[in-house]
Image (cartoon, rainbow, N blue to C red; front, side, top):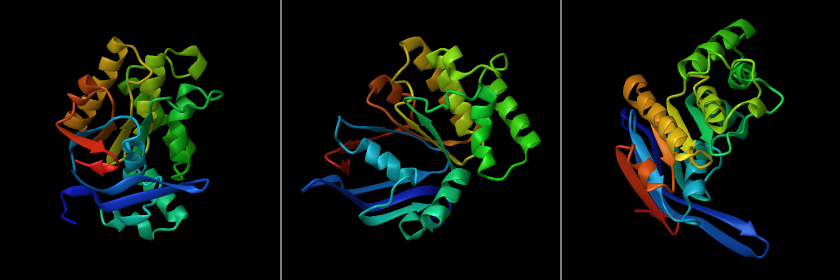
Length: 225
């Protein structure tokens, strides 16, 4: 894989067994993402968007085909190695935020650093800086239940950046937000891409959100267009 490519999918198929039936979520999808790109993946419900995101994020392995994250083919890795690679290289932002309710903002953002064996003081210092960077310096001790949806999504963005990943994957990041708040989140993703050089891959059904990306990839019936 050339040095400018961070993610490459080659003829990826993914099949799931649902009782007696086999569901073919991906049917030969290919995709190349270059370092520093901001791409949006669009498609109707059931098109394979989430499965494609799971492949890009090393959350699942293909039934057939190859998925490369830089020089690693994830189809050949043990789960423990995959988890370590994921933790170092990829940050995740989810539609439902996925914050831990009994942890405050600072603790939520610091959590991914625990699994990379960063010491406590460095975790706290980094988490605080990230929260200040997303405008939440006055919410460090607040728990998710004490914050608005937009504030929780900004905590999720800060958490995604905890281990300084090369790639940020955003799965419907504005799906639970009002239009104004969603716009702020999209502007933050654009800023991360343009000013910090992060590679952003965003799955969205919203054409207005997709306009923030520099490239749009369509997926239909499990095949990238």
